[in-house]
Length: 142
Image (cartoon, rainbow, N blue to C red; front, top):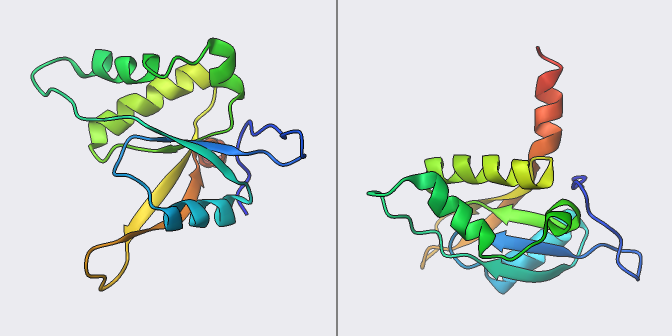
C-alpha cells in the first residue's frame, strides 16, 4: 500500500482523501479502486476544468485553476490531496511545479489505464504514484 505524503488522521483515526481531478470524470468504480489502493476513503472529488487557450501563456491559466480552489496556504500544506493530472503533458508539468510550490512536496497522482477490450471504452485506476517518494529515490542516484 503506498504511503501518501501529508495525510492527516481524521477524528476516526483514518485520513480521508480529497481528489483534485483535472481530467475526465472518475466513476464510482474508480473511486472504490482508489480507496482500496490507498487504504483511505475518498471524502470528495474536486472537479477542475482543464481546457487551456493555446494562444495565451500557460502558467497564468494553471495558476488560475489552483487559485479558483480557494485553498489557504495552510490548507495546501495539510489537506490530504490526491491529484488526477490533465492529459496535456505541458499542462501537467506546470501544474506539478505549481503544486510543489504550494504544498512543499510533490503530490501523489493517479494513473489510469484503459480496460482491455472494453466496449464502450472504460478506464480503471492502475496505480497511485507517490511522486515525492519517487523523487527521493531518484536523488540517491546523483
